[in-house]
Image 1 (spheres, rainbow, N blue to C red):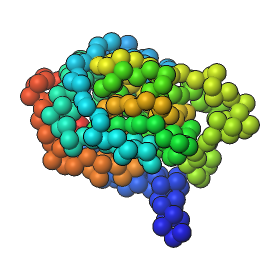
Image 2: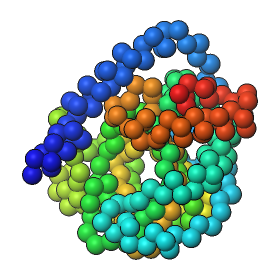
Image 3: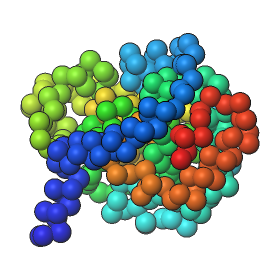
Length: 279
């Protein structure tokens, strides 16, 4: 009981998120004042992201077929299981292939006014389960005021695979946010409280192995994988350098962060994303 209360206070109170952002903003102030930020080049992807909150990236990547049978049963009591540690080389290559595209790098750079920060990288395995929990319910993310999920499909994601599902921007803006608490909502909550049909009024990002999508989960009301088949998706998440959630260094180990940053700089020595993105 006490553990549940402590968990709720830590993860569900907005005041805690804003306090973390305030602390991170103060920590970031010296570098913000001294850093010479490169200007953001024009970016159709950025324009699309700002107006709609999501989109499909114009390029794809080659990803190997991964046997997920060893993980059978591990995600039945969770929304997903992160299997990144078992595929570090694969994840690193996919990470570099995504960010090496100049248009994608320009979008990331511009969305955070030239100062993005790598918050997490995860290869998430999902499988069918009974009932809905946590991220499978409708919600907004509160990692930062602006966030980016770059999603690389490591498996074909059809209707049965639980594609990333969200309300369009205009409907997301109809959902009144609780002033103090981060809420999770059912389909009935959306219908009864806001008159939104969660089945008819949604976007579902289906795609093929190697397809790439982007979204801001803090601006779009969304729900995670509700799948009847297995699904494997890699998430690359960016925030500003003063995020609202501890995430970051707790979520991705410093050694892994340095490895990914070094791989990007080796592949793209003149790339737009600065070393501080991976610091």
